Length: 136
Image (tube, rainbow, N blue to C red; front, top):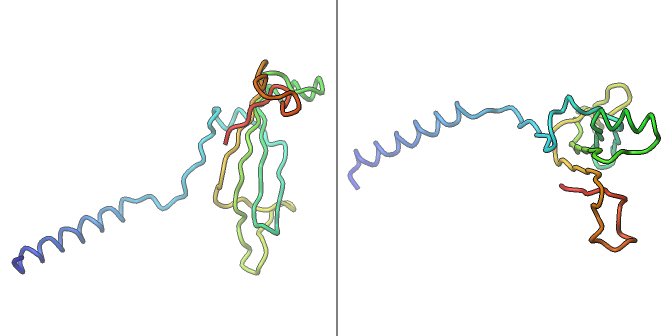
């Protein structure tokens, strides 16, 4: 191939690569809640696992949380969302904390459970979860 053509192709590749790098978003992606708006949920639990450097935050939809506190039972239609994160390092071999809780870093996985009438009836009775279905 002609030297000028090779140089031109090289310059084009470099220019396109630089433009792509400048246009790339360096912020981590926001975890999408597969069952709606995060504001419709309240956090009910955070489980820290310092030996693994991870944590799980558990949320319930606000209407079901209110009903569960009032009646002591989870109503049909309840949605529980669990988000797992890697913890933020403190730079000294431990984990950064706020209010005695590990600080979430990058999201790892989102798990969803929902309760509806009749769910699980195709499973053997001993394997049923009283109307709950889990998706990850």
